[in-house]
Amino acid sequence: MYKTVLFPIDQSRESREASGTVAEIVKMFESKLVLLSVVESPDKEPETVAAGIMASAEAIAQLLADAKALFESKGIEAEIIEREGNPAFVICDVADELEADLIIMGSRGLGLTNTGATESVANRVINLAPCPVMIVP
Image (cartoon, rainbow, N blue to C red; front, side, top):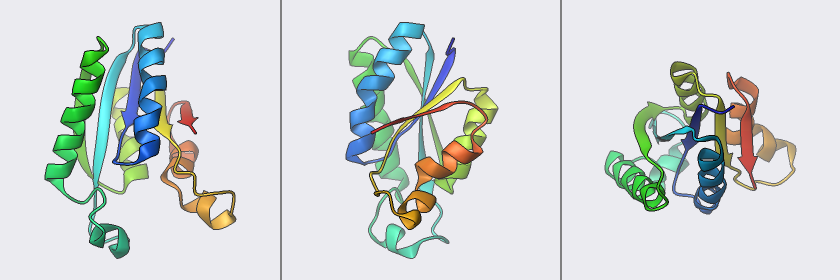
């Protein structure tokens, strides 16, 4: 059913917690797992870049290597992809390129305010994705 699963990761707790669900689904459906991390473009949201969140290519490379090792320890091979740009758009573009059957990602828990919901990467991906999206709380 899910031949290719795309798992966009970042340095958040929610992303780490979603990895268990990803492992279960990938094993259950014998899916190909693709880990994606996005280096955010510096021209957007200066407060995010100033805080160093997902702005360093070296940090992203280490994050992907650690995630790949985690899944390999569970007997799951994973392909890794690193891209630069707006996370929501890049996630959807990569899902389209790979013809992914499912995107699984953690939620940020920004709350139920209109501002938090409309600004979240997860919400943007849900609205733009070329395939089903599973959000792990």
